[in-house]
Image (cartoon, rainbow, N blue to C red; front, side):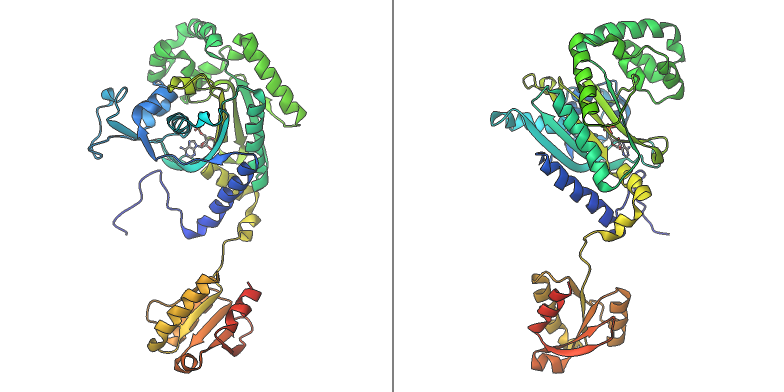
Length: 436
Ligand code: AMP
């Protein structure tokens, strides 16, 4: 038994798993850049208050799921009560919207152009109970468009999210949309919720009993079975939308209809982060089991201001890479084999150890010419080197001994036909390129 195991809820991404991931990442980059989104990379950790402020005190993420540590003594578990206003603690990012907004403000990116479109790909950390499709470290792909209140941007983000899944070869995804209005609509809604829940407060989970006091809306998003059951009978926010929010939502659904995008309206959909306003959406997939959302997002028109900037409309989406891979594996197994990951073309075999220096130089020259090549580093016998080349599925083996060194030649063996030919060193590139 190995002495050390990987931490619960994390994963090693082994070489065999890389091609599919790269396929997802490269498809993402190509597609998103085509739509004018630029890549952005922010740190793995941020000062804790950024997340508390943006995601919200009473959300699951902030209450239970953040990996937070003191910035001076990384190993010490901080006193949670001190976290809220302090910059002495750092948190491994549990999402990427707030860091992107922070970077947008900190670097005054709006100066050149207020409207900016970003995408990201990177790891996220949440202390959740691990299960299929739910990890403690996972990757998210995301889009953020900052600087516009236009419903067309909501549609662009939704369309691009669906297009990514389609381009990857995923089938059967379902789009669910809703509007959760703006703070103005929520005042009346919160009062209505409180009235409706007043009698059943004691049936709610401990967290929701607190939420009832501080942020009653969050009860709608609780994963506890009993709370979920109670929440599903409550009046939806759609009945409380102000005229502007209702107009925005109508335009959105009309726009989706015009593009022939199929969707369902779920009046009970709310998403787990406090910063959303108006449009919210989720893309679900049936093969994923209990946690069936591949991605989700929405508008967050107040977040930029909340983080110290001017009023700025914004909308985004976050897509889970691991869940996308699960859906992809069930939908398009054959894609995996067609990925353009370079395969090794040639293995250099030395007849005697004296030829190793010469072989190594040749190996570097091949690689400089973009021919994927390798040699033995374990001091194997000639026979064993040949067996290894065979096992690795090398199309060619290049054999080098004292004779070849002296004459500036190599013996090239085609492993499929078994044919061997003595050729001048300079000619090998042409042969290997020709077949590449
Ligand atoms: P969220 O940031 O919670 O809106 O999540 C966006 C997407 O990230 C979800 O639709 C999932 O695909 C993915 N996701 C969220 N939490 C996890 C997790 N714990 N493990 C794996 N993927 C996750």
